[in-house]
Length: 176
Image (cartoon, rainbow, N blue to C red; front, side, top):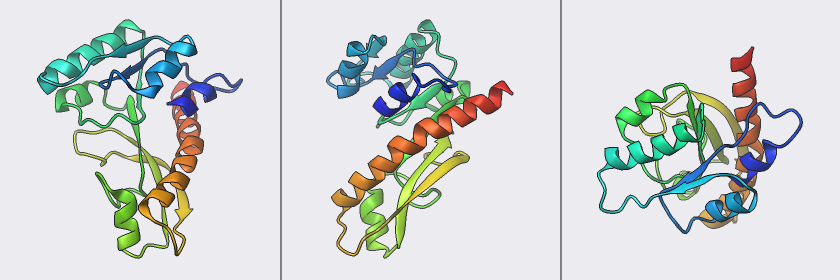
């Protein structure tokens, strides 16, 4: 989220961050967004129906003037209805070279499989988990002594470079 926010302030940015929303009230991204003057919205999903929670998040996004959604660290599966309403307008970043290793524990799974490289993918969000069109990827070499934690640290650096770049290209292409 921070990488997207700061990249949005560069001269060639094709996007503006209008809202940072989270289902975790203590999320660090909310604190950063407030400090940077970005509107925030938070609502815990606990004891709420998925569709009900998604509707509240969506209402906040629409009220803020969002024209698309870039998920960054949002670790909750969205309802099919919500995803369908934002078809082609919602991106996510995932810590693997999709279509490999959808879901969780991607770094450990890549190491256990003996892969030479891991990485990150930016993709369109679809109702099927981590299955939307891949818009960009960055590869990260898996070192012989890597653990899931050390690999995750390097993949996160690649994510911070890739996501703003892909988002910018995606939106610039839509304007053309």
